[in-house]
Image: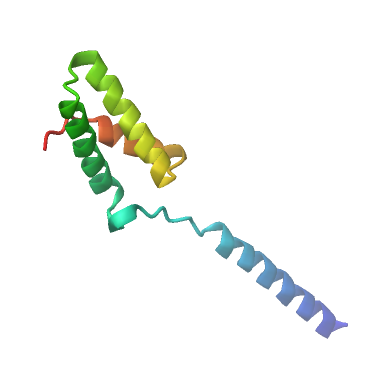
Length: 98
């Protein structure tokens, strides 16, 4: 009986330890071209600014265009939640010129 309870305790510890290990893993978001979040946001911001320049947009129209462009790129990268909000904020932060 003592052997059975030892195995039961060992199994319980292994089960709980395995659950903690799985709980700590996170999903890494990969961006095309191997860039990081910040650098991708800068690249996307410059691309969106160049498109806005080519269309001759100024003022509110330019701001709305860049916001939509950054949002579209975040969708393309598959970003969700806080990562998406951070990406969009960095992308829209400055009116980056190329």
